[in-house]
Length: 140
Image (cartoon, rainbow, N blue to C red; front, side, top):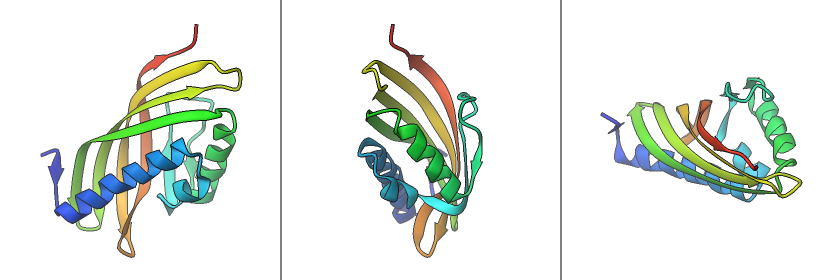
């Protein structure tokens, strides 16, 4: 089943996705950082310019550097799968991202994250995120 486990946990995970997306749109590193476990990992295998990163501080540092290249970003997440098992969850969310580069050229990316989330001190955070690209529309 695509959605299972306690409703309250599934709602909290959906809110985690929403907080993450909102922080991206507002380029808010503090709120974005709070979405990650201390020992988390982030992988973007379709983007070789971004190596796999382990640890919240390293993840945030890479994100802040990347976001500096894109002055305007719209990022939307839609969950397709949330399965909660105690204090862990498997999550898949689809993303739609539109961003301008420093020259004002617009790119559109669509893809999905395969996530592992954990509940720490009553709060859901990302333990592992792996992004796969489905479609990219680049400026001509």
